[in-house]
Image (cartoon, rainbow, N blue to C red; front, side):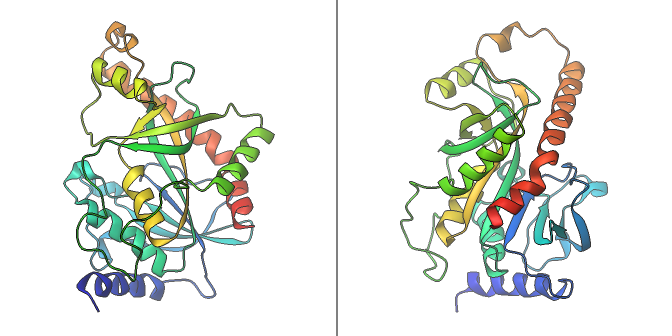
Length: 283
């Protein structure tokens, strides 16, 4: 057995040992630590990510450390990774991918990934949701670079259905029924942490992207590699429309306040339908 597999198994066995009785999640939700979990999700315990063997989670905010939450909604078990690894924190792509492989060994078959994004598409608005159906990887790295572990997946995985079309349609229909504006989007994966320049924003839009973010791409690639179906929703909090960025005269303090307000609005919208999304994709 390879060193990579040994670490995955050790991590997954530790997490499974903390599962509540009869807890068998097949759906996982990945969010940032500041994402407010909806009230219709009930909890049967949690684990600090920092205590999990072989995890490399970095979070400089000691009061807001990442956790794995053992949740349930609509009588369905859901494992929530409340806090994720970021490439811009200095964590390798391989380590980010390792987290997804651990979810696979825990029995996870479907992942919902939620990420804060900026919008490049001038038709979008801050405070809305972006339903992601494809991505462009401009992160300059890839979690599959290096020796391939055949037990996890094939050397050259097919990315033609990276954001599972069947699951996408179910989320689309849920948003449609709630009369939400549906911003179906191509996601541009960037490294961060600096904001985008006006020229970069123009380039990303001309390349075909609707939103940009720092987290989803490596999670998606690894999920496809190991056979987990994947969908993603962006919380639109920043405007990255070329030319408008240069005209923005707000102070940094005001920009931050507006961003937090947009994050709150987008989270509330997603919270209203997240339980229904879990129910539909589970079925």
